[in-house]
Length: 338
Image 1 (cartoon, helix red, strand yellow):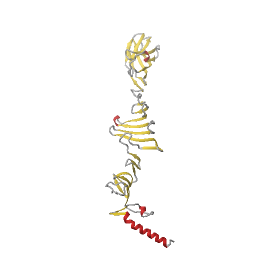
Image 2: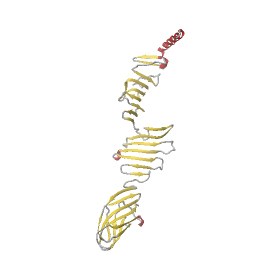
Image 3: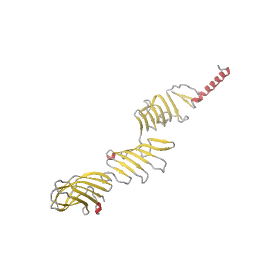
Image 4: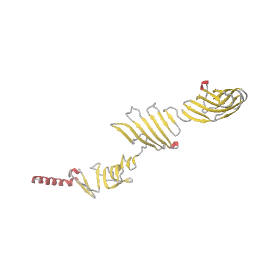
């Protein structure tokens, strides 16, 4: 049980606080503004029931919402910002920076980050490298960053994963790119952006290795396809028939294989010209070489040698015909693109 002295002391403290209340409180229509803090009134206020709680960034200049308000707002029935209502809103000069909507969405980064039932949404930046969507932090360092970027002018959308250290360290990049100018083609780029670094770029129909390296396509360092060559009845050939042939390019080397058919005019030396699938300026005997063998049953076998026709930039098949019968030859030759 409190003593009389303790009761008198408590009454005196209440009296002192009541005297301070008019100085610390500004009452206007539908609101009470405390110039100091709530703790000035009591350290144990208990439940506060109010229509809206508002904490100003500058208590000495408490602007109202719509008039440049900055600070924190809490309201049970919700406050409208944009198309959403917010129970909690962090505001800077009447612009929403963060908050929680009445239907459970969380907003941060001045609206750039949203967490709702559909997951986490991050607004992409409009300038290359201007912002980071996801950062994986390690103390003060940032060892990995994922972010997206939209180039409105070029109609491209990028997504990057970077390994970032100090300015002297290398930066490795995984880039996923949707390119409107390439009819929706998709691109994957694995690269080292340091000068002289290497990269691998995969697009809809090409694969390039190295910043200055070749492209793996019809004009690149690796490609395979078919073609029907043009045949030239150069020496002792009465007729010839081209067949579908295969070829493969690796770097500047091209491998060709398939069948040709020929009718010698008479028995003896024969020469059949064969066009190349990829043009090349042949300048030396070592630029093209190959062999072949007759693939016709019931007649003596005949073998061929294939060498460059330097004057005409094509292959020439040489053999000795033992008769004039129509023959099918299975051949293979390789050459260097020059």
